[in-house]
Length: 280
Image (tube, rainbow, N blue to C red):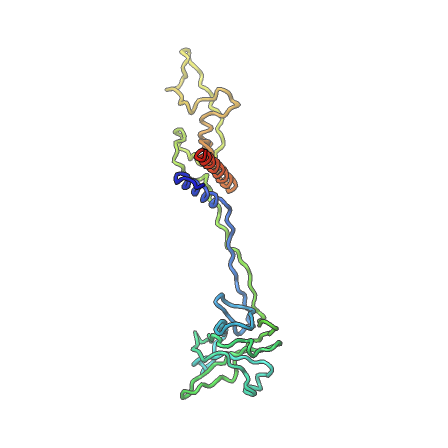
């Protein structure tokens, strides 16, 4: 049976209050640590990676150099893959395998989206990722004799790169707000003090000596809020006002959560009673 429209709003508000009362967990961000020995990184849309699958769609990976190309080879750069041969043997036996086109430099560094997949030519073992800086001479690209080299390890299903690590860094938690310090604007009996703050109860004021006429010897009658209590064992009205005891005011997260749960229980019971009455 559905709740009436008059009950839906209190129930929704109570549920929102309960969610707000729950303690929040500080979010964490991932910090990437790259050693100085790393000359080139492989990145995805999620940022720098230290490993990844060999079988990936073209343009999944982007290779970026961490060092600049040297003049005169500053017209662009391309990424190549070398395995089973040394740098001194280039170019022989179609080595290395070119994995990208010649793209413009960004601040003197290479940024090459890879249009090939490692799974097509990489074998298990050690390999080298090469960033070859290029100069254009009469429309003909010429590759620099000393490429930027980055070592890779090839396993059966993925590539791996040393010198890259990730650290989870938690964001600093916000300082809890002091609800007791807020000015509630309520009248505290003419004392002018903040009724929201918790203050120690003041000792009862001594009753003034009475004159022969039975009245106090002061210039006027004492205000009811300042009178001494009839019994010292009970807190006076003035002390209750000074301590801000006008009603229950939750101050900690646990008290707020308990208040929200109690409110949900009361509203749920009232809703159940109304539904039962309508059903009968």
